[in-house]
Amino acid sequence: MALFKLQQDGLGIDLGTSYLVISDENGKILVNEPSVVAIDINNYDIVAVGAQAKSMIGKTPDNIVAISPIENGVIADFESTVSMLAYFIKKARPDFSLFQPDVCMCVSASLTDVERRSVEDLALNAGARSVKLIEENIASLKGIGVNVDEPTGHIILNVGAGTIEASVISLGGIVTSYCIKNGGENIDQDIKQILKKKFGVNIGISTAESIKIKIATLNSDRENNTMIVGGTDVISTMPKSVEIRAKDITPAIIPVADMCIEALKKVLEKTPPDIANDIMKEGIYVVGGVSLIDYIHEYISNVLGMKVIRVDNPMECTGIGIGKFLKKGDKVRG
Ligand SMILES: Nc1ncnc2c1ncn2[C@@H]1O[C@H](COP(=O)(O)OP(=O)(O)OP(=O)(O)O)[C@@H](O)[C@H]1O
Ligand SMILES: [Mg+2]
Image (cartoon, rainbow, N blue to C red; front, top):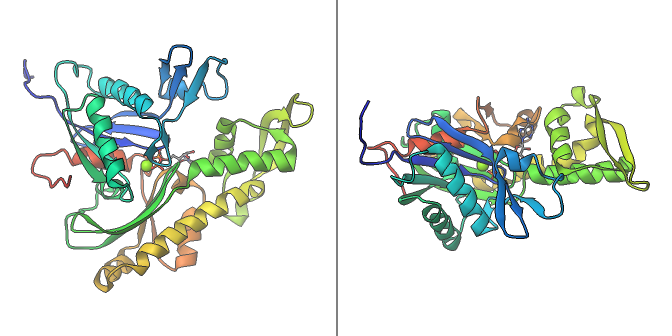
């Protein structure tokens, strides 16, 4: 083992709307935590970060607020995001006070130049020595193990907490991309509304998310699966639990599934014929946490008449891939 190292190893960072993943140049995950910070509004001190802050959502006293500083893939609260990222960089590299890491960060292909500069400033303020930006869907493909630099076209759909982005990629670059600012968090909000209107129960956003994760399906064979849900009665405000069926929340899922199809159609319309030929043979890679919804692959495949490829680690592949862009000799497009 080297006794002294002059340069810090780099970090790959996927700063998502709901999860932040940091990896090393081999794609080994060093941090995987919710993008949440809890702040004491009396003095703006950070009280908790990541999983601990997420567990506080909906349960904090009046002076503490748990916030997600990234909204729909865009930095909504710069200062909180800097504090959160600095904390996680330190967690990934405990010897960081001596050596600042070079970082590669994922960005949506739809970000404006101003938003891109803001991501660079964010990383530099959080302690990075240098920062390179890589489009998220290119990083995801690399994380899946696809050779992105070959002259072969690929199509990928990323359905995260706050963004739905479809991209066609060839020769390590974006051929065409389309992003809709919607995703898993919108499903949670809609589930909350359904429970309120149909069952007269107010539930917290974390409960809405757990309903989605446990019973959401687009398969009619499983639409009668049930779950007991706890919250408060809309009128009496007393604690109340109700039994819901998977089909009760389908109206919250369908709009997002349809937006996935819309995004894919937009990029397919703009795909040059030779690349379209590659894509038809290979199929559509689908990544992001929302792709874990039961039967969403089949739903997309049935509407578009194309093969849809399930990947092993849809929530981590972007974070794994971004780290691999740090490897010397690999192309990095800044
Ligand atoms: N098993 C599951 N079924 C359905 N949804 C899930 C499941 N697991 C996680 N999710 C949802 O996936 C979303 C998180 O996915 P992901 O980590 O890909 O998003 P992100 O990268 O943080 O967001 P974005 O890329 O939009 O900025 C959350 O909305 C979460 O509730
Ligand atoms: Mg993401």
